[in-house]
Image 1 (tube, rainbow over the protein chains, first blue to last red):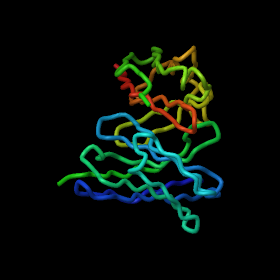
Image 2 (tube, rainbow over the protein chains, first blue to last red):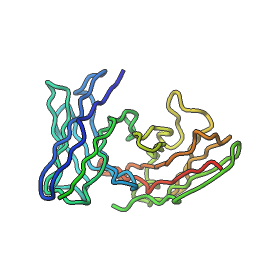
Image 3 (cartoon, each protein chain N blue to C red):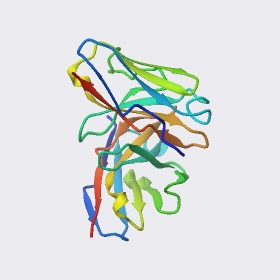
Length: 118
Length: 110
């Protein structure tokens, strides 16, 4: 069965960076695109971007372009999402979600809470 | 890219039907039949309820249905049950391999 297991909660200071991982299992890792979605406390879901796990191509939401980097390690079946120059507004739960052919997400990670606080 | 517009909250009694709207534009909802709907209980990851506007994944109750008219997509839940109480989000393909989510709707089962 498909499983997406994310790394644990993080606490970071303003201006720092954070890197969240998402380990996939139960399917051929390089055959799918992985997306990242975040949700600030009490707020809506927000699409961040995606990576093609096969060829490494990426696409980012305009809001996050230049501050978010999504990478993958095919040997570890793991996707990473790094946010730099953290501010309090980046406090959120970050989810990885596996893309399905018609732009929907059937599988989600459990979420990783990132707290930005001085 | 602006969020899709959803009502902040809807409510209904057990057994009733409710509809949640999701209004976008001709750049997203209106141009593609690629709207999905997600149910999210507190502290949990979202769960796919509808994809491609009106299709249900295996295991999702047929009480959930989706439709679209122009720039507005809708999610209808019939025969409301207590466990349907949750937040619901629409999501649409927005062209150029990008996506946009709605603002979310809190469903209260009275």
